[in-house]
Image (cartoon, rainbow, N blue to C red):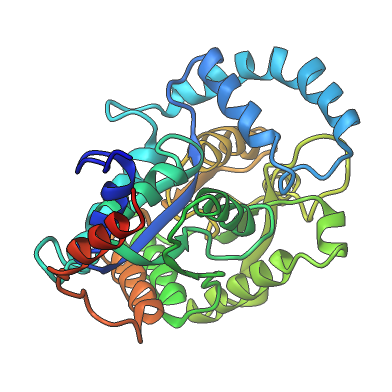
Length: 368
């Protein structure tokens, strides 16, 4: 029987036993099309809308809707929207997420034996969560904190990330240890960072008459089935209003980005914006705390489309408060969150010079 060479699969796996053993962090976000074109958007939507966590309609009915009505037409309509926010660096979500990865990496060690490697993975599109896990394992991570960039937990977002992580590690012979961050909707440093971003906005532009706090919506029956997202959004909004010392009549909470005719979490942002415009509000400040990075839903839907709707309804100016993005307070928050979940894990272990040799001897004794 032939003994495997150093480049074959078994000794390659054996070599992993002798490497530095580190803890790592996987940053995860929703994702984005590769390009602002109909074919790229169609690929992205196919993956996104095929997720059973996102759409819980019976599959046979949903495939008819998805392939018969959504994918043939919606990508072409969305192409213009994506083009309106696309930058020289590409998708704003991806560019900001890469800056967040780099900022967190700098805070957790930029190199050397004690480095905590940070990888970026998107639930849909590229770079994938699978490729991010592979990158961490190649860099010696045997303990991984999974940090979805969703402050308010929902099965449609956070749990879907966890599904993708488990799908990647399931076939592995040697699993890394995993810790999952469910959310951080009421962390004091998260609320403080949001409040600081609003104050900075007011300092630059003056204080608006009303603050609208808008979250991405989900179908109402998901809440009725036990998803805690609605309650977490309510708490985030309340804590932010308290941090800003806002009276009840100068702020509102709403939910955006609903799709179809079913009931979603309400009040709806588009309806609220028009109501505030008709009521005579001249300056409407709007923040979207559920988005850790600016994207199509904040830059095009809120800042542009809802801004136009506000003016058309008789209002003045809708002024969007940017997401926390790669700001220093946000990166400090993410680093603190990562450290909290890394706590208790041993520091990086030095390579075991004997591990690979001992394993090769065992293989030889078995006749491989």
